[in-house]
Image 1: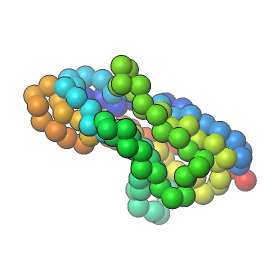
Image 2 (image 1 turned 180 degrees about the vertical axis):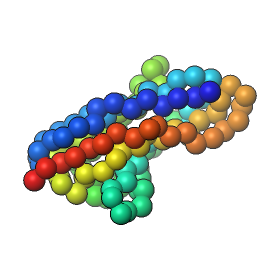
Image 3 (image 1 turned 135 degrees about the vertical axis):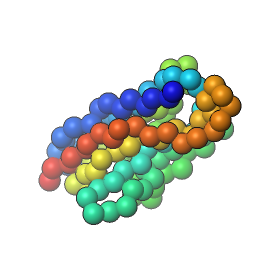
Image 4 (image 1 turned 90 degrees about the vertical axis):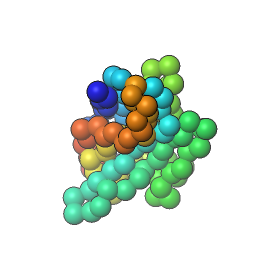
Length: 120
């Protein structure tokens, strides 16, 4: 089994910063990409940022220049540093991993979600 455990959400004032972490554990053979999605009330889940095994880092246009994604391969952990937060960044943030498990099956895995609330 594979688990993704997120941490770091919370309440912050507009202009503030938060750092999200997501650690993947379990029967992992290799990780192809990890990323963060978010879902605000009444809206669809959207990609915030991702980081691929090749080092590619696509970002949503709304967060470019404010958020930075990074990854610690040794710890199977991905981070999302969020700065200059805005009320419209308020959402549940979900970690995602595109990985190959120890049975050599490639699947998407999701964390349980962590709430980020930005007050104005």
